[in-house]
Every structure is written in structure tokens, then in C-alpha cells.
Length: 457
Image (tube, rainbow, N blue to C red; front, side, top):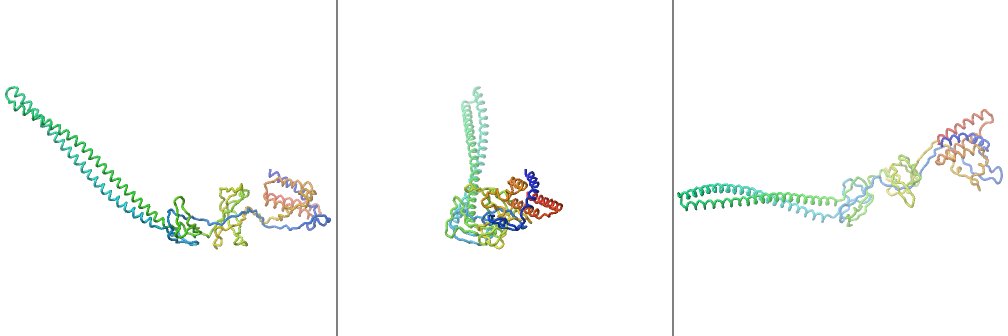
């Protein structure tokens, strides 16, 4: 569609040129034709640079701004940095009161010593349990040996009782000997039973001793774990003591201080912001707010000029660093944040300054420039459809209609097109009377118009 319209523009250019040839030469005003003619203001066309810009406002900020808080609650005992103080990384900038923390550290150290003593006690108990277990093993071995002896004596007694009984039956032995042999066998049977009961008790004692040894070992491990827990608590208190000294995380300058000596800091739910430290003020950022209608023309790397209220007559320069994707909607107006970096070696730009920016989105050098007021001019009492337009031939009207269909032209493109057409009219008005020379110069003017329109579109 665009290529077709361009072709139509080029075809209609000839008609527009011939129409322009019939117009009065520069310097003549319509006011000469009668008293009722409009009064016109004449401006001179020139060549120069045309820039397309996006206007925006923003705030000057440091490139890196760190908010320093406190992990602990307590009272500020001492301030070691103030506004505009230059600080180094790990440099103390404030000190909390540490009396409570020091008491907690002393209690934690005592708990560590108590846990170490408990380990010694449980180890002694474990050693005793191991000794009891060994003794139980020895006892059961002795009982088993006694059982073996009792069983052997019982077998002998039973053999003797059987022999005396047999002799008594034959009438050889006495009844007293037979009874004695029987009593001996019965006594040994009781001894065997007692030895078996002793073995059962020894087995139970052995199991109890083994369980006691395992319990003692577990108690030793529990005591060791308790000591490690106490050591961890001591380390936590020591960490809190170190955190009571608030240090700068970076090299920079203190931009703001939100505390005073004696003030209580409460860090129970959210870490309070005590200081704001800027990494360096040699380079600053301007966070500009750009409307969604203009954000499509902004690109990273584009040149930016801006001013601040403190130096209204000085134009400062920077470049677009990034376009943040997060949109901000306020009363149905959608805007985006554009980050612009600018050098600040002199240190005159301060955080929080308001900047008025012009983001250069396009630039054309050596362009024929027409004042914008001339492009917006309309005759008094006219809606823009009468006057000179009504006198234009069909070629000029067709060119206007073709260009009107290019609705996506930017202001810079329309300005360039109007300038090209004005130059074309001026060239055609100055054509010589000789037909051949007039035709050659008209063709050259049309070729120049084609080249300029191609460059613009």
C-alpha cells in the first residue's frame, strides 16, 4: 500500500509542479490583489538539522543507592557517620547498645562449660556401664561352670545310688549306705537346679548391663549434642554483637541519615532504614516518565538532552540506558520508566533534582526546513478546504490526497515532505521560457523530488 501511494505521489508530482509554476513568485503577497485579501507573514526556508524528540520529566538518582538497616533491636549508642560523609566498605557508621548482648554472651559461655562438664559425667557413667557389662559376662561364665560341675556330681551320685541300691537288693550292702547315696543324688539335683536358676539371673543381668552401656553411650552423645547447641547459641550471640556495630556495605557517600543517638530501633517485623548510601555521584541516572504513546520510539543508546531547575540555562547530556518493562498506571494514564545515564564529575547534579528531558529519537541533517507555523496556517473563516486549495489543479489535489492516506507519517516526515514540495514549486516557478530547457529542468526537479520522497518514506 505504501509503495503504491509513493508511486501515485510521484506521478502527481508533475501536475503539482505545473500548478506551482503558475503561482506568483516569492516576494509577492496576496495582500496586493485587493484590500480584502488576508495579511500574510513571510518566513524564509533554510537548510539544517531536524530532530524528532520525546519530551519527558524525571528525577535525578544515584546509579547505586543502598539502604542500610539493622538486624537487631536496640538503642543507638553512637553515630559514626553523618550526612555527606564519605565511607568505605565495612566501615562502622553506627553502634547499638550492647549491654544486654554481653550478658547473653556470658550466659551462653556458662552454658557451654556446663555442657562440657555434663559430657564428662556421662562418659564416666558409660565407662561404669561397660565395666558392669564385663562383670556380668564373667558372672555368667562362673555360673555356667558351676552348673557343669553340679551336673557331673549329680551323674556320679546317681550312679552310686543305683549301685548301692543293687547291692542292697542282693543283700550285700547296708540300708544306710543306700539311703546316703540317694540323699546325695537328691542334693546334687537341687544344686543343678540352683545353678540353672543362677544362669537365668546372670543372663538377665547381662542384658541389663548391655542396655545400661548403650544408654550411657547415648547419654554421652546427647551431652555432646547439647554442648554443640550451647556453642551454636554462643556463636549466635557473638554474631548479634558484631551486628550491633552497623557497617557500610559499600564505598560511597551517606545521602541520608534517619536516626539519632538515643533513638530506639525496632527490627521485630521489618528492618528499619537507618542510612542511605550512594556508591558514587560521579555518574547519575535520570528516571524519566514516558507516556505509552511515545515509548515505542525510545530505544537504548539514544542521545538525551535535559535541564534542571538549578541550572536552567545549561543543557546537560546523557544516553538512554534501559527501558523498564514494568508499567505504571495512574488515573488510567500508562507510563514507563526510562533510565538515562549522565556524567556528573563536577558533582553539581544532586539526588532528587527534577529534570526536563528531550529524548532524541531521530535526526536529519541538511534538511530543507519549513517553520511549523507555516504548515499549520489556515485562511481566516476557512476550514482548510477553500482558498488556495480550491485553485489547485487536479495534479496537486491528487498529491495531497495520496499523502493524506499515509496516516502513519511522523511529524518529522511530514515536515520533510512539505519542504520537498515547497522546493519543487520554487524550482518549477523559476523554469525558463525555452521549451527544451524547461522540459529538462522540470524532469531534473521531478527526479530530485522522487529521491527526497524515497529518503523520507
